[in-house]
Amino acid sequence: MRPIDARRLTVAQRREVLKRFGEKCVYCHDTADQVDHIIPWSFKHDDSEENLVAACWLCNGYASNKMFKTFSLKREYILRWRDQWLKKHPITLWLREDLIEMAYNLRHKIENSCLIFETSNEMNTAEEKLLKLGYRIGGKIKSKTKTCCLRKS
Image (cartoon, rainbow, N blue to C red; front, side, top):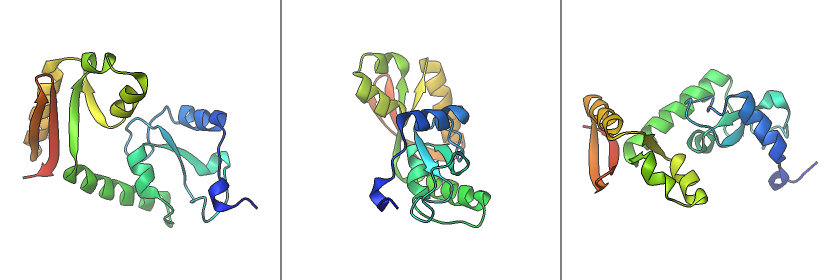
């Protein structure tokens, strides 16, 4: 048996899992960049295809090594905690043209932790919708980029 920190999926295995789920998180449907074990690896050292799903970094973090009776209970738990996290932390709105100028590694990290828009009109529409849902908009970072604090008023 491998030690608990020896769990390693190959790059090919990770790519295959992400591809199988259309690179969408099975919990929140955002872009997936990680692989989650349905039954945590710490409980059952199982890297089989049936036990692996695509997940975004935030949902995978909340999934951690918790056990649930059903997948739907796990999803409900993750989404509840994800929503609470989003209400406490700022979300950045970016225009794609601002991201293109950045180095790949930085751009990849930003793309997986913010909302990206093609036009200022799209970004303004999203801002209006967030306000209508009861969220407060934080402040402006620069003319094309805004930070939103997703907290209920």
